[in-house]
Amino acid sequence: MNLVNDKYEALVKSYLDGNCPAEDALELLSWVAESEENRIYFKTQKDADEVWKLTDFAMPDDDALDVEAALDAVNQRIDAMEEAETKTVEMPWLRRNYKYVSGIAAALVVALFLGFLVMRPSNATITVASNEQNIEMPLLLPDGSSVTFNGNAEITYPKQFVKSTRSVDFEGVANFDVVANEEKPFIIHCDKMDVEVLGTSFLLNADPASDKYFVDLYSGKVRMTAFDEKGNETAQVVVLPGERGVLNLAQGELKALTYPEVKEADLADNHVMVFDNETLSKIVVALEYIYKVEINLAESCASKKLTARFSDEESIDEVMETISIVSEVTVTKEDGVYLIR
Image (cartoon, rainbow, N blue to C red; front, side, top):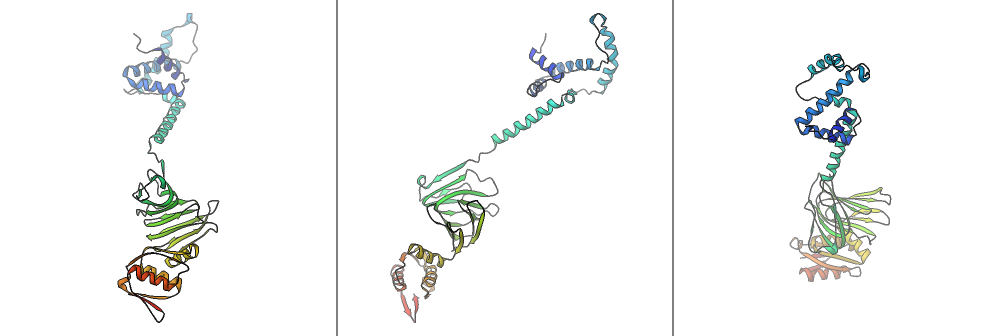
């Protein structure tokens, strides 16, 4: 009873003749490995193939063919080959069909690589806009950092930070609280500006409708980098706590401003100086710088906080009167020096 179907008979013959395509050879090799019977059949066909390849004479006509004589002529050479074989099934056909086997190997490598691409973790991105997020609730990023929108804003970030940096794309206004990781900087891409963070909290204003981008740094340290239209770096500045990094988009100018300089710039640009729950110690420093006056602040009043808006039309006397009322402190003036007690 013939246990081998016509398909595999044809595959074996094609393989031994060296005419088997790579995909058929792969199927045949799988079939050979399935059972001992398949391996025996293949070896039998291989041995028969080797017999005819070992004959050194041309095949005569049928009438003159002496099969016994032909076999006797090669028996000694076959016996010598068998003595060199081990008990395991050897595959000298690998050498004869090297180009086909190497083709299979290459195909397997490609398949494994494609499988890796399919199976590796997805690094798809997520985009969240301020109108899709409760503006009072922080948005938690994959590394534990958080973003709280402060007006219109949009952020795009990966589901997982898998590279040596944590990179996001951002536009608008938001407060960032970044988890510290010195080995994996946090980088915010904002059109013509990058903000590199090691771990800090700050306000980022990258409103596309504005002519300036800025970062108000509360703690830590950030590095701001400006780029031109072609993506070439044009300027870089390090911003420290209490400072504001400002990029003038029209001029490409990038600089760090101290707290008093920030308030002066706000007054010049918006005609309003805003203090949002700031301590009197910081406010006094700004007022001294802007109004060119001397203010003596008692230590007991330094930590008091104030929220107020002053226009550029208000004098220092009017500002000090407001501070006295709102902060519940006593303000006097002696020899041109303002005393806050």
